[in-house]
Amino acid sequence: MSDAPRFGNLIGGEWVPARSGATFESVSPADREDVVGVFPRSGREDVGDAVAAAGRAFPAWRGTPQPARGDLLRRAAQLLRDRKEDLARLMTREMGKVLVEARGDVQEAIDMADYMAGEGRRPVGETVPSELTDKVCFTWREPVGVVGLITPWNFPVAIPSWKLFPALLAGNAVVLKPAEDTPLCAARLVEALVEAGLPAGVVNVVHGIGEEAGAALVDHPDVRALSFTGSAEVGRLVAARGGQQLKRVSLELGGKNAIVVLDDGDLDLAIDGAVWAAFGTTGQRCTAASRMIVHREVLGNFTERLRERAEALRVGNGLDEGVDVGPIVNDRQLRRVHSYTEVGLGEGARLVTGGAVLDRGDLGRGHFYAPTIFADVRPAMRIAQEEIFGPTVSVIAAESLEQAIAHANSTAYGLSLSIYTRDVNRAFRAMRELQAGIVYVNAPTIGAEIQLPFGGIKSTGNGHREAGSTALEEFSEWKSVYVDYSGRLQRAQIDTA
Ligand code: NAD
Image (cartoon, rainbow, N blue to C red; front, side, top):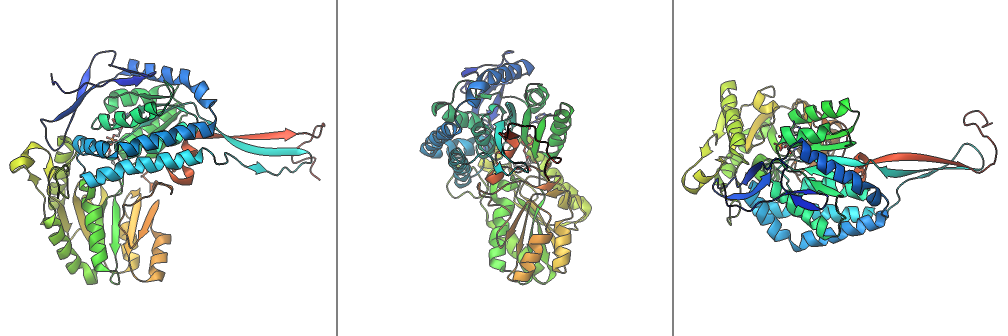
């Protein structure tokens, strides 16, 4: 058994082991021998305890004035600001993204806490005219109750914060099941809330494996809303099982995002954007660009320059100065990424660079993969249709704006699409026609800011948006209130003349 530090679940304000005593390890993807911590491998009974604790804490939290709930988030934001560097370093160690990106991940949580703290003092509803005299109508938001949050490893602080902070501001009690690859990042985030003064039981954390702890949370009848970010495959399961109990289920799923580069686009800018969007976070972003749809006129030039830039990237431990691309999160993902190289070759695409596991020297300690480019890719090929979630990009030729847009729209997903053009008419046509929740012009597919709604269409989700002005929607119910002070029965639609 590892002598790494041991951590508990947070249930009713206490950090406790799984009832069964079972554990799992969080291991650094840059170094298999670096065990970050040992965590409870929770089961149904632990999830039951957490949901019960949340249920007990809910009435008092619901009764806490919303500005006071916001003030608590403001204190948590300050704690996260104070700890930003430590938390970023932990993140790089636990899931691999390079330090500069890990700092951005923590900053996103700080931004979200600040934003939600401000929301604490904003209006919660509308005053609406009545069709009858001496009658007022208004709406307000109410919390849903106990909500279950299930999060992935690729934004291990930001994504939990996108769910936790709005859910809490709206007055819900929460059970969080973080990804099994990044339990410590989630625990540190929640610690900031606890230290900021969150009452015991309002947030509970249950660590564990998706099929065990995650599934138990989805199934628990007292969890009235589920917010899930992860793969489309698991998202479908969560929707089906949650739907059986008529829960509110909001899903943020995968992507197969594309950058369109037209012949009039700024090629230098497009290359910078392509390198960042394809290989940043080792391609493990839901908004990563894994397709480059390039006008035939500039295709050769673009592909060659992308190759040069990809080959110049330094792959290594994200904690090391000067490293551009960190490891793949775990061995299973590494094998999956490599399997897509074989798929691409089998489909007849041309491997321009990469396509190999990197295991020389220190890289052999972790899960590293070479930045990989395929050219001569046809839009229908699997490598151009399926989410690989690694540093693998497909270059696809287009003859016109219309064809480029058709290619961009040709996958099941619809998260983030971008276009490089200097022609304002083409830019606006693309904004209208690109089928995605997020569109960028002259910028890559990544770069979302928390004050805008975030989410996708088609198989990327089920119609919800996180963050921005929509952040509270998934975590609150609307109540419509009618007050008749006429002293007589007034019938809507009938006594209106
Ligand atoms: P995943 O679906 O494997 O796991 C996500 C979470 O679900 C984890 O906490 C996991 O333990 C849990 N889980 C797994 N099986 C479960 C089950 N049967 N029941 C309940 N919970 C279960 O995804 P991942 O590998 O952690 O993350 C990568 C995926 O997330 C990619 O597809 C990526 O595109 C997507 N993602 C989407 C967004 C977005 O906002 N659209 C953001 C980040 C990541």
